[in-house]
Amino acid sequence: MNKHIYSIIALISICAGAAGFYLMNKTKQLPLPEYALHYQQARPISPFTLTDELGQPFNNEQLRDKWSLVFFGYTYCPDVCPTTLQNLNFIYEDLTNIASNSQVLLVSVDPKRDSREKLEQYIGYFNPNFKALRAEHDVLFPFSRNLGLMYAITSKEVSKGDVVVPAGDENYWVDHSASLVLINPAGKIAAIFRPEQVVGEVPSIDNEKLLSDYQKIVALYQ
Image 1 (cartoon, rainbow, N blue to C red):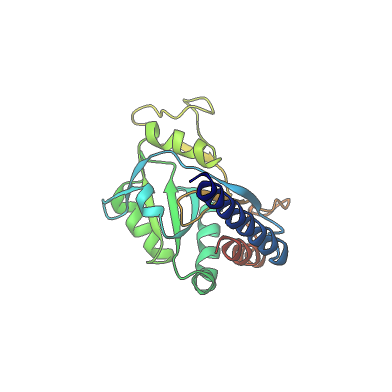
Image 2 (cartoon, rainbow, N blue to C red):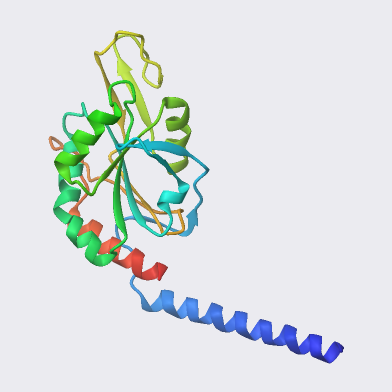
């Protein structure tokens, strides 16, 4: 009996070793991302529930089996948001050629002014395949921190870092990250693409660099 147990343990060890050797060789053979902050161990995302531009719940389950590029922004944003969404629209076909299950998600950081209807109209202008998500700050703020992104309300009447805007105050803007978070089909954070900062220009992510690393990250996951 003991001999059988030892034989089974030995077989499991051999299989595990072979699998580890295969993964090590695969990683060595495949090129690694050059520009993105790539997590070798993907980071988990805590349970969340947002609402999409159609009024439907959007939670962790909607991330599964898809490659998701997540961007924080808002419809009143004067420069970074339209530039980022336009750039993503330009390369959307390339993204889907790399992974047919690619999706682009805009998460509004301005729930006071960004209604579901406004987000539907706004996101549809850039690409009808893109999705826009919203939630109140009590859900949105921990979600943003989980993803490694930050935002802050800036107004004459509130201090930077607050997420509460006085009633009737529409004279505010929202400081937010221009980074893109890449979530893998397991619903975990795989990488972060950070914008390039050039004096006098809107921060943006280089499309060629994004596509290059996107292809490498997808290949490493498979």
